[in-house]
Image 1 (cartoon, rainbow, N blue to C red):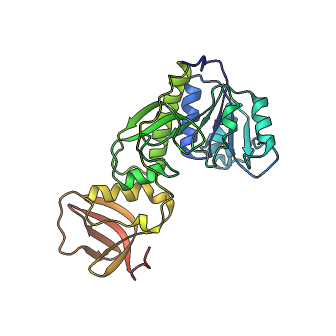
Image 2: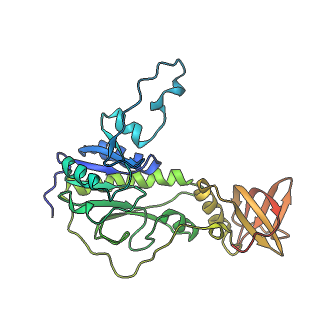
Image 3: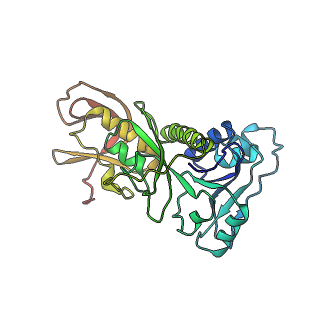
Length: 310
């Protein structure tokens, strides 16, 4: 077990302005973890640059207050924590800056750039990453998308050390989350982030567990393409409804093809577990009823020409 006291030894959190990073930071702070600062992607500079908070808003309309937006950046500023932006991570100034910060560990939560192998060797206890799957399954950049496409229940989050490869480092802790029907991507990100933040806080406070190598096997999925947003009529209705709800933030069109016709699905409205329709797709006034196996989904959509081979 490493000699690390999460209540007093500083860590840096590397993430984004997204929902999951904000949830992780909130849980770390609630647990009393000494977070020394937040690092987010930014324009390329020789070394990380401190991002100053905006001046207090004096407008009478509170909605214009910059602190009204919920994000990890605003939460860090509200707590008096420094926020840094970083560009290319292989610049020598980045390693020098990190050594000067002297964190005991770096916790990564959704940081979108690959960490050069030299950086995890700088903090005393390396870089740890929160990955939203039960590793070694669903390695890669979009694990939540693929778990929803494959109808995985429960979802999981893994705390692991980072190594030279992607999502292959030793395990520190794992936890599961039962996903509710109809949850959106941001809602799932927030739930997984809160669970991951608690997981990391407990591991840091306990001095970090013994490293456990990942078991053999596992899987890797790339970024999804247009074909991966198709809806398979062999799915059950509940699966199709939950997939669209959880991945709608991607802004991609969904589509179904049956009997030589293609329909574009804009938004799902609900699902029925047992209904049987007279045709694979019934359209009326811009509302589609789509037959799955079993059950049906109600959606807003239109008939369209068949898509080019995706």
